[in-house]
Image (cartoon, rainbow, N blue to C red; front, side, top):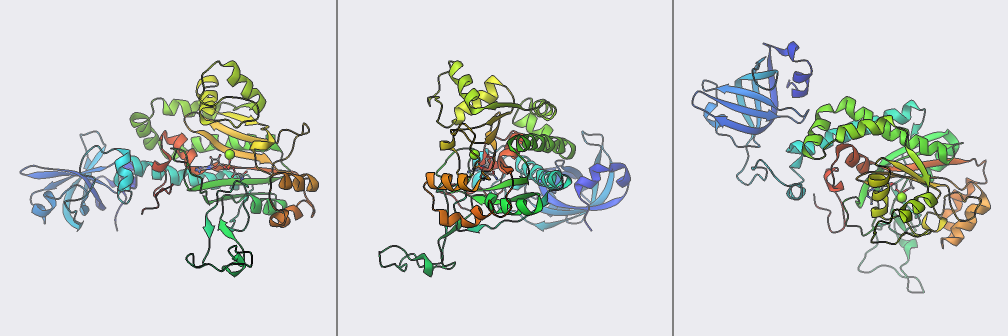
Length: 461
Ligand code: 4AD
Ligand code: MG
């Protein structure tokens, strides 16, 4: 049975002078006459294990001339080390599990993140990507623990849907029709009643509407799954397939879920400090100065909360030259969000009560008739990380908004029913999981925090 390098370092005393077997990939290999230094990483933790293989060991010639990336198993004795790490291994029986060919792309010590995206099938062998994916794992665990401890149930909402839940028209079609020769109606339109689901269907862009149905039965629920958007955004913050965490809470209002969102982000940060200290130290050294201090401060400080109208006032008063003009009624652009979080507040900020015309149909209308009970949580470096709202729980109010937004009431009949069949005030939000990982690792491109990113023009791997 192999021993994980993680376990060796977790309790190294326990392993001193014991024989163990390590399996992993060669990070570097230095050969001298009498012995070779082999540095192995098995992905279980940030640290590599240094192994000294004596020339008397079996397979010595082959092992000592192995290339970076070779997959090896080495049996040996764990001993104290005089080097940077507390322990190393005296390798007794090395063997090669998988050789590496000359065209292995990770030969060079330093490779750019852009290059690594082109070899996504092996990039998890690098310090950076494996650290990102370990943090990603722990933040997923943290998510379940956070919501489950609050008594919220983890639910699974469908990925295939017939309705555009955001009303933004950015959906990928799901169809089994012959695209070269689709059936037509009398009017000459494509006849989706002949399609697999006997209606037009898409990949979902949010699980929210179905989560509302379950929140109005179970109280507090959350989804955590992939969502799909065909928006044509070639930015460092957008993916076509991303993971979203969506809590939905009955008997809650906008302030309740704004606080919940802030607490959740703070919890994620604390969890990362507890479970990924080596990774955070690495990201700070390599990618973002002051990362840890900044995160600690955010985890301990209440989030600022301002209305959209106040945000617009701050932006206009700032006298800063923006590419997009700031005026009440238009959406905040990335440059505006960045100014608010990075220059004005120098901290995350919750912006509430946006104009109804720039938000989705399901948000509760305020008494002013112009704004809705929406909130976005913005963070430095990333921008919007959470988008949420109190939902319109008034039947006629919701019908009006569906009409105003040019949507077809028929498509939302079951959703309207929820307002007729024992409705209740309720609210929720969606956190972009990749954006949360970017924020906590300090990585600046969303394509580097998901193993196989999908974005316009790319579905490789
Ligand atoms: O603000 P959004 O569009 O809100 C919703 O979808 C609501 N239905 C959520 C809810 O209330 N249950 O998206 C939520 C979050 C954004 O704040 C952002 O972090 C992330 O999802 N997001 C994306 N992340 C990566 N790539 C994209 N293309 C994203 N679009 C949104
Ligand atoms: Mg949003």
